[in-house]
Image 1 (cartoon, rainbow, N blue to C red):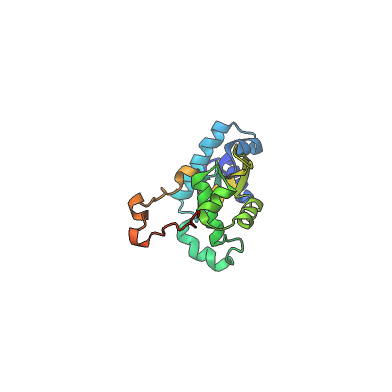
Image 2: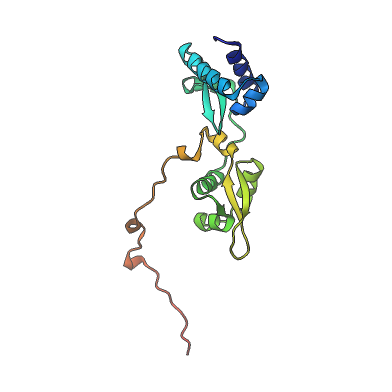
Length: 189
């Protein structure tokens, strides 16, 4: 480590456990943001150069120390599985929100085909999503968006890093005529 600033930044990032912005680090160190940014890049390179088990990543608009993926096996032996894993329903709902935001609860339910009230409540409590106002439509349903905590949870810096959404061609979604249900209505006689 070449400077006291780099060492101080490494300490701050280590004890935080969460991404810290350049502005937060500048306030904590009393340094100019530009100097902090340069020191972060230098620290990032130093960790690579010395083959550290840690890496410095840009995540959710900030910087965070994280373990290198190649050492996950060792970390896994020490730590118990995360008790805060998301359910399949929560992951499905998060994916819908991430790709379609802002989106309302009824729109989510129309896509999923089931009620999402409980899942939305859990995601709000975990701060993975947030309410973003009301939609200007009948009933004024609440709009939902993902949060910086969502980015942090999935280890991405922005929504642009999400994998592209694969959409089935419309022709593959068509129902063959012999399988189609024909509407049967009572006669108005």
